[in-house]
Length: 418
Ligand code: HEM
Image (cartoon, rainbow, N blue to C red; front, side, top):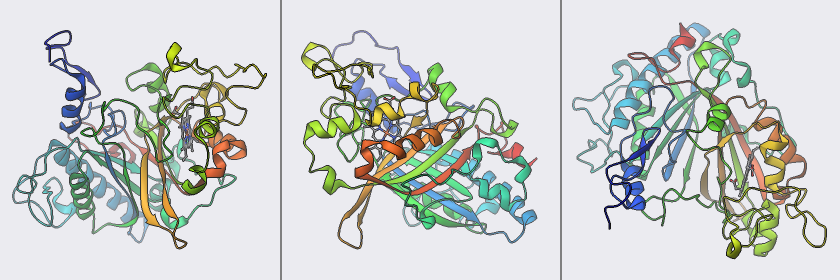
């Protein structure tokens, strides 16, 4: 490896190093994927950073019997998860740790079945903990008057086949890590910290490419349909990302926060896999092999994943190259008032259903400043005519407010409760 350009000039995005101090960017990206994430002090981690390979997403309900108790419990749980999450992300395990929950928040030991983290050989693995608050929590705590507009319930949408037990929730904890053992242990520990005050409602595990296995950990990953998924996402750190993701208006407690839409979308892989590769490309509007839009020139003459989509382009037969019902046409921000969202979903594989079909698909996670002007209208359009609809089924839905980073010495969502 040469010591050329880039030597000694690491570049950071959020809090993770994406480019190397040494000259091999791929190796540096792999190392970065395992480094501790501390957050930027403004936003919660687990949003703008590269998504690690493993996800454990848990939704909880508060168990309090009345609004006053729910309000107190909310504060206790948010404080426990703030302190616990911070400790876990540092990669530390503290001796003399609490086993008894939120009352001793901050004392966190993670490991496997009681074994401390170092003893269990568990490093940081790029762990992130992201906490969300559902509208149901505010209602339960008698805080209806403080509900932010963007947290309005996602309306029933055509084609929905939602299972209530897999959706909704008062609170959410998104745990991501490059190592599944670290993700499991952290999610488990956070659950135990709040066990006296919440009950788990649903859990969704997910996975993406590991940095260690990917030829280039920064490249767009594929989903279970084999498509490159995430190409035309706003780039973290760009003005478009900031506008699309961070809440600028609304209540003070959510300024600098974001809203997370979760949709468990099953893929009907048996029928998808019967399509030819060309037909698969037409459904989305991008080539399967390199992810280039169908309006792009062939790879040999420079077309590729980053070529801009030309939605007016027609082939020699006069037909639109990106079909009327192609997924990327119907979802492209230019047809939705320029409003984008940041998709950071995970593949899931939950075994077989009762008929022996695979229950696999996409756990769609999208961060946005306001779902009323982003997810909802886009999904309404997709539900009406997306060519993908034949091959997918939305089976669960949830929406959470993701507050900004806590104030120094304070806790997530603190100003909601003051
Ligand atoms: C783009 C797949 C669901 C919104 C894409 C792309 C693929 C894809 C392959 C093109 C590459 C890219 O830009 O990322 C899927 C699959 C889904 C799904 C397999 C379900 C299983 C959704 C949903 C929404 C959505 C529910 C929002 C309601 C978008 C947007 C783009 C996109 C905004 C970018 C379009 C552009 O500007 O080019 N999706 N998607 N997708 N998808 Fe999806």
